[in-house]
Image (cartoon, rainbow, N blue to C red):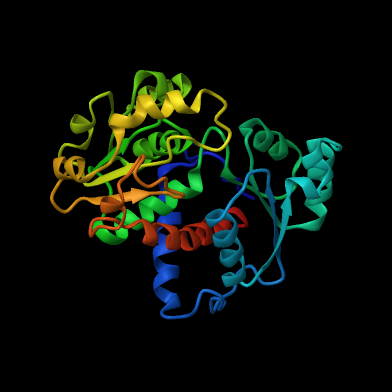
Length: 307
């Protein structure tokens, strides 16, 4: 039984096997529709419970389709539908019950501590579908997408522009595992957490953190960004947007990257804020493939967890 909570928890070989398995399974599906199961159906007779404390489009749908393609079934629980979500039941008690009802659990929550608490009491694997500290499934999907289009990510350069949020933290963890260069351009006020930076330094990550967006994007193979205001942000949102205004990904910034660089955004996007529609809908944009590949990356993660 394996848990998938942080990218830093897995070794390089485990992470590479997940990506390579996702590539293989996607290729083997051919032109099957999204609702058709795989031929091998390794999850047949098994089910996944998904808890959503935060709203979701891509995570909810892509995990549901991933489970179905693997031959399993899923049960989706929203925060206001269960005792745990209302604070009426402890995580320990919820975990003990869910361990008897399901074969694997996925949770999307504001609190990374909740995921670790669930892990302590579960008898089944748990997958981090997003927390305030990381979004590992998204990053694995992004690496899958990058390699599908650009080849091995090793020694390539990824430029992250904007808020040093949970997704950027997972990318910092991935950079040391997959051996790519990560340039993060963000204001000092919105840098990734100090703990994440310390871990990156400890792991000798090829990391650049700068306030200069052109420096970060220079000669990059991929330029990425995310919403300036994430779910759960409790600070002054107007002030944050004002500070981040100069960190917009636009045509000028894309020209600083390699001529064949791709643009990624994990979505949802606030067009004309962190990215212009010209870039979002342009030839370098691969955001729709990113969203689609969530299914394939997560299928591989699920299979790895239930081994």
